[in-house]
Image (cartoon, rainbow, N blue to C red; front, side):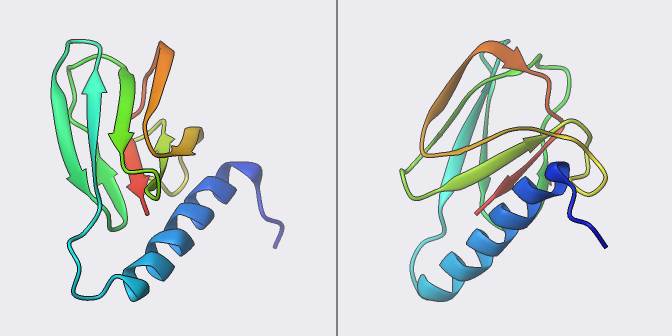
Length: 105
């Protein structure tokens, strides 16, 4: 089965989360703060696909430590949804990203 580009961000974030989870046993989990157009902020910890809060507009910033990787997805599920953006550490977006879910690794 071919690997689709939209699935690469999910796979890499999931693998990174699994590997980092193994090496950080006993340590505090990594968290990110997602800032929306409205100014509302949502704090999330790593571990799989997490839905983003609705009704706050697009994502303008994902803030976290440099080692934290993430991928934003169009739908509320990461499987079958299109990857919109990915990165690591703190990232700001000039144009808000209309994402419904995030994978943190």
